[in-house]
Amino acid sequence: MKTSVTSVVRISALCALVGTSVFVGCGDDKDGSVAGLRVETSIDTTEIVAGTEIRVDCAAYRGGTRDESITSWELRVTPTPSTVVASDRFSAEKAGTYEIACAVANSIDVDDTPVTVTVVAAEASRAVASLEPKTTAAGEPTTVSCSLQDGFGNEVSKSGWTPNVTPKESVEVSGVQLTSTLQGAFQVECLFDEY
Image: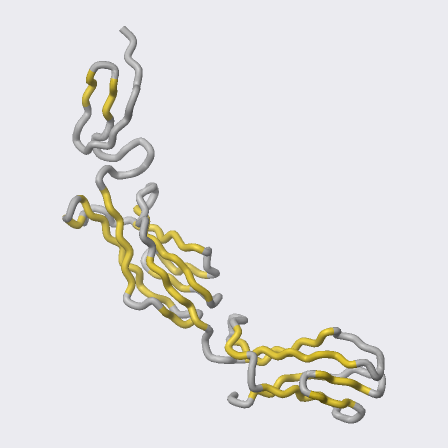
């Protein structure tokens, strides 16, 4: 008599052969998931400064009871940050919004309702000037744009600045436009009002 598998059902602590159906589920399923398990992710704050870290608490529940036997966790983060410190800590250098979900290590059991963390820029540490075009003929203007950034390159501010040109002789500054009447190389930096 041939027996074929016609359905697989996750049922903990039940292994039975009934007719031509096989039910599997004594403990962990073959696909790596744990039957009847719900994973939850929690954090103390939803906003952190770039380069700092927060603790991520992971928990597993069977029914309404916490399963303390699960102690190995992984963090699934979207988008992938520049830094994840450990399985219970999160840190990112790039400002933005991240979704974090706990997952049982080496398993497909993952929190299907991830928490959201917003990473904001750290303290301003440098002003960055850019020119478009970078090279011009004498008498033709170039446009300056400035950005105040933290140590990770996150933008802190783009407003309240004036360009400063060295040497100043032969350079006309009109708002964000610079025009030199002479040929040469000039250093352009941004001076921010509040910093």
